[in-house]
Image (cartoon, rainbow, N blue to C red; front, side):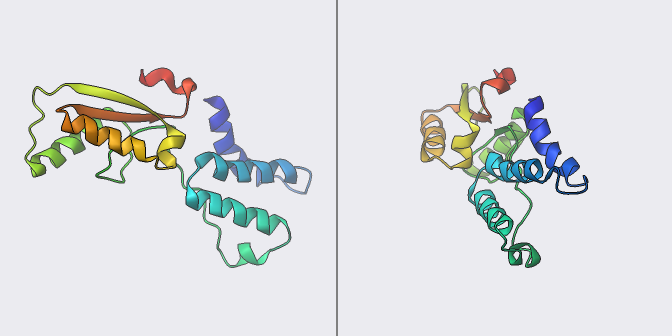
Length: 156
């Protein structure tokens, strides 16, 4: 996880270093931060940065490049909201409100964790939300948690 912290913090620190001595690493860290966060908007901004580095300075001047949209390394998700919940408790609080509006009583229903890869969530893989729907139709309460990879095993 220290590596991910460095990738996040590195570009912010390196931009204050003067001269061109560190320009390659600054550029790499900035480009990688967009790639690592994933998603269409971040990849588009990454391509714009690459264009700017290839002497198309108009891209930066026109403010076409946005900061990377940060997606956490771990989160709980559901197809009925765009919110990425930081904890299962936040998710359950939201789920209880949602279910009370829909007239669904969760008392006594089995709770089932679904462990997902973050990259699959970012890519909006269809199976994720299909799986949640299937579990719900079977009378289960799914808790879909995405993680970056095996280094985020603390969820389990």
